[in-house]
Amino acid sequence: MIKKRFILNFPPESGDKAFTYHLVKDYDIRINILKAEVFPGKRGSLLLELQGKKENIEKGVEYIVSHKIKCEPLDKRIYFQEEKCIDCGNCTAVCFAGALTMNKTNWKLNFDKNKCVVCELCIPACPLKLFKIDFN
Image (cartoon, rainbow, N blue to C red):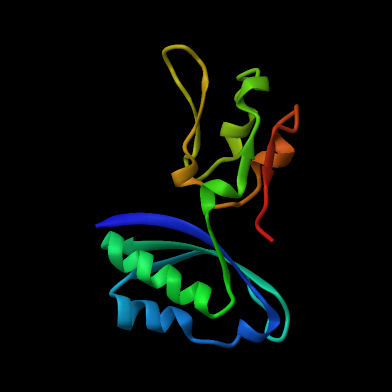
């Protein structure tokens, strides 16, 4: 079993479909909704964590895309300019998900995109503005 996180962007015509039901029922995928901005009749965005067999997740993503829902792995929508980071640690103070931590040996910043929940609190916390998250 694997876990993968995806950002889904819905066109207005897809906002009222029960696609998560089909992911569970037809593809045996466990779903964890980490963030949602979905408005009926309007565009919407959803951060999902999918857990299941690799082949089931691949088929589930194909199902999502076949319904005109844009689906991208989370790590392709998070931008961090690591090479410019001064390792001040400001972002770690606001990261409740534990995606941003300081290495206690060398005091370098560690960023684990797999733990990120797209709360976007790191964006204003970083004095150098090194984070960008494209949720919408």
